[in-house]
Image (cartoon, rainbow, N blue to C red):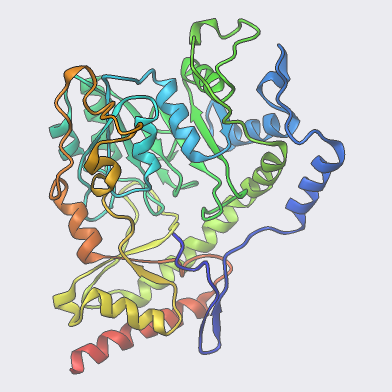
Length: 418
């Protein structure tokens, strides 16, 4: 979320931009700058064909942390998502079922390889894809389903796994917002066939940009390696994975150095978020008009954001007025998250490549349904109910939480008096 990117003030409490870079990252970058090179990929057989020392060290650290066999770095989570589509062999004529309430890359990565995203609605209590609607959207063209673990938690992964097994579908986890969350003893992002993590500047830990693809499947890992490095297979070791059309999705040594230090901070930063979120939930419990977030059964929530559902009738004022009054007091809060993706011009016009309708009409197929009303829960959440705040981030404190909770109750109390 980006509600707290500008410094805001509420009486004596400020909400500065969240920034977790210190001398450790500076030292790591300085070491790379002094030693060189800034990118260690070499176009010849050998270990450096897949990155320099910092990149390979970071990938090993990431794999250890999350208990996976393979971790492949990318220059963004967006390109890592495309790498996941390539790794699974998805292309023209195929479909991937995705949620519409997520960052656009969760759907456009499918288009990037000539396949078609099909949108399934979300659950109102998790904001994640609803396995029941996924079941209704499966066709003979469906090759995978994407679970976007939104705002710091996963959705009904148990039901989705069962559904995927029955239909022999792959599961991609877009885990950009939920690094460190767990579900039945496993880290989110490691439960499906492929998971993708983000190191974008807005995430729990960040290196400016950057992403990581994780998997326990050697073939998928090999294809991801080739996809991010021009599809070149100079040593012949990966002949079973190609041929692949690849591009330059490589992470630099500088980015990897920052990301490795940030990875060491993940547990600390998540503990801070969770503690603040629990305090806020305690302060807001029972407040009319608000439905508070909660962890999944058998899992955890790391609160990338603190998502609320707002009931205008119970609250006694409109969502817009509620948010505006809190923003006026200086609190980082906003209404809605992203417009349902299928309502974006790209999908409404079904024109992704130079004015053509490829891949939406590929091989004479009927163009997909992207009409308004396609996912009613998503539209209700976005246009009427969803409210999000970044107040549960380190270095914010209990004082920030308490001030926010008091302000929320004051705004609602004033509405009741009218």
